[in-house]
Amino acid sequence: EVQLLESGGNLVQPGGSLRLSCAASGFTFSDYAMSWVRQAPGKGLEWVSSTSGSGGSTYYADSVKGRFFISRDNSENTTYLEMNNLRAGDTATYYCAKNWASGRGAFDVWGQGTMVTVTS
Amino acid sequence: SYVLTQPPSVSVAPGQTARITCGGDNIRSRSVHWYQQRPGQAPVLAVYDDGDRPSGIPERFSGSNSANTATLTISRVEAGDEADYYCQVWDSRSAHWVFGGGTKLTVL
Image (tube, rainbow over all chains, first blue to last red; front, side):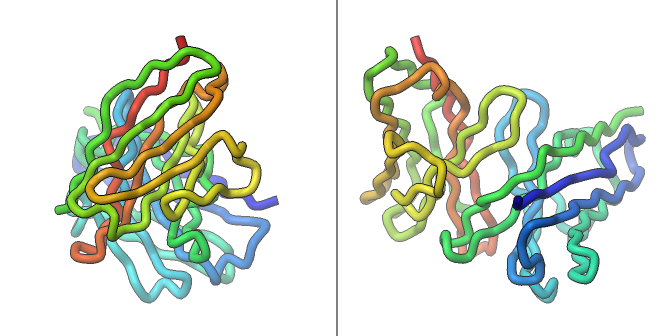
């Protein structure tokens, strides 16, 4: 069964840092791009970042560029989101998602999400 | 940056057809994906590449894309279809994925 399991969400103060992890199973991890999407409480989906299968290409939303960094360890079937200089506006549930190349890049598998709360 | 516009809400009676629109400049030139998100759950891919269905998605779900509007159509709506629906495209100019603001489907 194809699965994604996020972890690392927590309560953090403004200006702090956090690293989220997304462990994948059930598919050849290195063959697929991976993405992070967040959802603030009561709000819509916001794309955060994506990485290619090799990790050689990375993409970021303007709202997080320069503060967040996506990476992956294909030997561990895990993708990461390093979040720095966190702001109250970063408070959200963070989902990781698998990009489906045959589906024109659609996000065909999602994790259950991990909650990040930025507050003093 | 590219913007996708969805109506905040759509209401439909059970058994009727729901149509949820997603507006964008020349969206016809892009591949549109649709996601369903039930309350308290992660999103699920409902339609990809304008109108194809992933395995496990009922045939009642279909999509179309023309000019400046893409449409998700749900036929014979059921109570279980009540959810938020989001459209999504890749903007190659900015190298960003873009989501619409979401539409809450209410089954009356």
